[in-house]
Image (cartoon, rainbow over all chains, first blue to last red; front, top):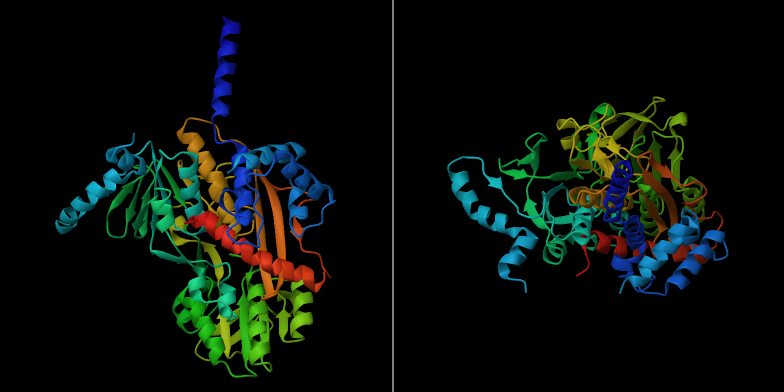
Length: 97
Length: 435
């Protein structure tokens, strides 16, 4: 009985968090502040980040983070994210059309 | 297939359409009427600035079945970011103008033009100044700032017609511009700068820069005096580097410890008195008052002793009122009070509200503040920070963010000035929607 209850609670917890608005959507949305809604810049001098291959976005962000890419502000910002966050946000941005 | 009825249901307009007709009858008989807006839940957003418009848009993005209504006093909004470019004379006020047509049309956000007079957190409705009630399941307050004129002797809200603050964009921006245009060459421009916290910490120094740019090109014998209640300011080294490179000794910054703090003003004589007893007369005075959260925060008993709203950092829900969220400048966080911060707050709050309405626990997340300042139209500098958001608090990630490098070359500064415009265009499109 106890085992059954534990399993039930675990299952509940899983559904509980699985359907919240995922953190990655908020993280990606904060990129849109500079890069434009849904990652597409409205000013042609800006840089769109939507729909590029995940591996390219991830590599670029990691290079900014490690200081291998200079940039103006992305080198400062990329340092604020874990490698895992970078991977997730890269995957999410790559799905945007 | 979506029928017209379904569409109306989705956008929550059934109630508004029905009630709008009824309203007239009610108001004629002097009875209080009520907006009833249908949806899975109804989120009311007070204030249509960076925070309010962002939270409204992102709630609809995360869950379109939730009805969202913005209550705002005006059909148009003028952004504070970039308002210094109008004061400097190289942008028009129209360049700062945004409206709610995309939020309404594309995202299905309801819009009520009006002022919130009172919040009843027990009955869960707000009462507008015309007596109408609007019910909510969740309430988001993003009302911005109000001024504490009483902090400086002789200062009154009425004096803003002569001594502009220009710290809320619109007519005040134009008034300050007009006064600068009328100022004689060789005149003195005084800016009175408040202590922290206030909206847009680097704003006064960007303004000083762009006023200097205008005066240098048009009235080069003029002088700019910045009387500051602080002993240091954001991007200080970078601003000072820029001022000396571009404007020589035109800009004089007086910190609090050497008598920069203004304790008294005579608006008629245009004289300010500093803590060291010095009286200084200005041809144009830009008096930026001490600040607190907008009045609705204190009148609703949501303010702490310093006048700002304490919030649960993970959700931006008020620490004193359930289902009431406070975002943007009114909220008390470690993030600078900027449009970008308010936009970030809006996204965190939207995710939290949608998760809660759907019976889920909001996730921890990470947000950003990025702010550009123009030292001239072609000379930009920036500051950025990354914040982890959890129950523990909003904490800046160590080793990340910071300001533009000192001593960078002209090309770098020019690039950041271009990115400032890109930033502006994109944050505005992200907040109020792209057509």
